[in-house]
Image 1 (cartoon, helix red, strand yellow):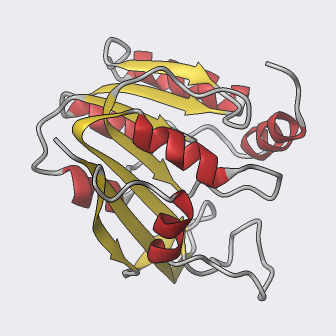
Image 2 (image 1 turned 180 degrees about the vertical axis):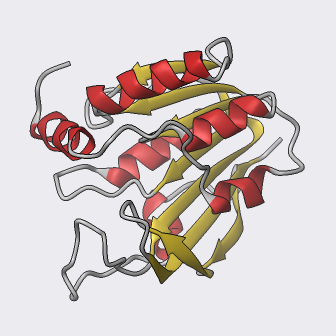
Length: 208
């Protein structure tokens, strides 16, 4: 993979953060997945790896990808340390250039935001097409600015889940929006501080 601006930026972000030995899963993932039969999952923008480790611990076979080599190498080491390396495949992808090989029963894209150029709709459209029949695409976005976010622009527009779904322009005969809402929660930042934040949650299911 070329050393693109995205690689340089996100390698720097993760290199500036201390490694996490026991990363926690995102709460919206645990809400959405609890009760589903385990299968093949794709974690887009896996970051520290809490989602991938949690899914693998519940029987899912996980492909975890990130643009950052630092994030990918740390997660590979964590998967070995937690004894889940047999269920987690870690791959480095710049999603502007390549997409993991499917199909997947679940694609999870949590906070797939970047200050750099990325055709996110094209990435999420590819994710929807990579689903198995009956599979789900879970997209969780920021709906507000946390005090610890790299983005502190008060004029930022956070597209609603319905706006995101419309932007994907998926055929409604094949893909159905199952959830589109904006719940709030108390979040904890990297420094341990807490704040109330809004999540934009979109779940799309491919017809079985």
